Length: 177
Ligand SMILES: [Fe+2]
Ligand SMILES: [Fe+2]
Image (cartoon, rainbow, N blue to C red; front, top):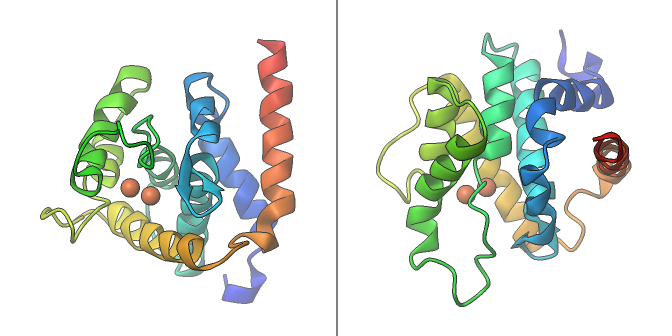
């Protein structure tokens, strides 16, 4: 498929489908209340890293494990604290990938690809390089998103309606639980 043939909305909802057990789970909703960069919540950050990683893989026609790519990306910053809060664990940049992995394992089943995505996403700040294709894609998209969130007031303006639709879907689903 050529770059321009890809329907971004379709890829977004494919990401939602592949990550649905995480996205619609109760522990995951904690991410709405933490700030990642600028005005972007951790929830928006991880959803966008996940979506843009899948979009990248589709555009490059990469043969990858899409479900693991999406799930690993959704959980890569699942460390469950606000790093702006002075009481957060010290050396956040170096340590949060391990903390996120530990927390993710408490709530979800994690395979080897997902584990590598989470544990190695802070390379080169942390020494272990992502070797699996899925982990490399997420590592790069995470850097791009973080930069955008730090520099721009509305980094995901283009995707706001999709993010709003997802939030409504989650609210509806949780009401049924
Ligand atoms: Fe991170
Ligand atoms: Fe991140």
